[in-house]
Amino acid sequence: MAPTPTPFQFLPLGAIIQAFIVGKTNIVQAFPKQSLYESHNAPFFGETIGRVANRVKNAKIDSLNGKSYALAANNGVNSLHGGVKGWGKRVWEGPKQVGIRSIDGLEGGELEGGESLMFTLRSEDGDEGYPGTVDASVVYTAGTQKTAEGKEVRVLGIEYLVELVGGDVEETVVNVTNHSYFNLSGNPTIEGTEVSLCSSDYLPVDEGGIPTGGPQSYAGVEANKIFTLGAEEPDIDDCFVVDPATASSVPLDTRTSPLTKLVTAYHPETKIHLEVLSTEPAFQFYTGKYIEVPEVEGVAARGKRAGFCVEPSRYVNAINVPEWRGQVLLKKGKKYASRVVYRGWSDE
Image (cartoon, rainbow, N blue to C red):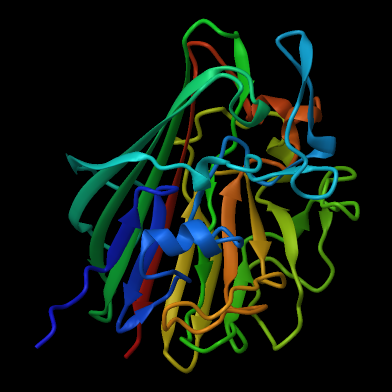
């Protein structure tokens, strides 16, 4: 009899989430070994994204340390997900066991287990054009809860921490997230998945994905109202905002902020549920239009809408927008940090 697989699996490359098993389904898009991520992971499956997630306008930091900085233009004229070799393409140190950590702020009963693993990375001054040497860590804490109905809930807590070290500069920019693609059905696409978002406020963008102004209401999405992902529509790749009123007052370290349930998802075929919670002020919701991964080593090809992403983060291009830059501006002696929690379970 084959052993029961570990519910969560991780890789040193990109501190990647390789497996998140609910019932018999791995609900994250993945490859069976690290070398395939190196050769085929253009969509960023499971990667820890940094130094700056999402896009930076014109691949340029307008002002840091009294000067501007040119970044790699790897997404049209913009810089995307940390550049050509962002943190998701780097090999991290670890995993190192760091004992048992609590996941505070969770509803639904006490967490059982709680084993924690840490990955660490040093990003040197000039890495992909970004100023300053930083030390980054990701701590994954796995455990289980029981629902009121007795269902076992798989819980994964994530804590990010980044500090500016050395004497290169006095300030830099950081915005870290995870880029897992979720598929609750085990089918080739996410069609039939029922989702709800905590907010209908989003950042309208230009053709390159750069915000053109402050939050507006997203047509066709109502906060906390369920809608179904179809074969083609809705086609979403936008940054939703939890509370527009806090845009200029988001702390650099959000870990003590309350967890907000950003997204819920459910698929009626597998009866699998997913919740994504975070302390972050925003999240990119992406329905996977541009996924294109060939069949490789017995793993079927993945195409458009093979998964959806929920990327808790700061506002897009925040460093270049005066009223948002405090969200991502890391100075010496300060800490950039945040928390994310995934909860997955099946009714079967």
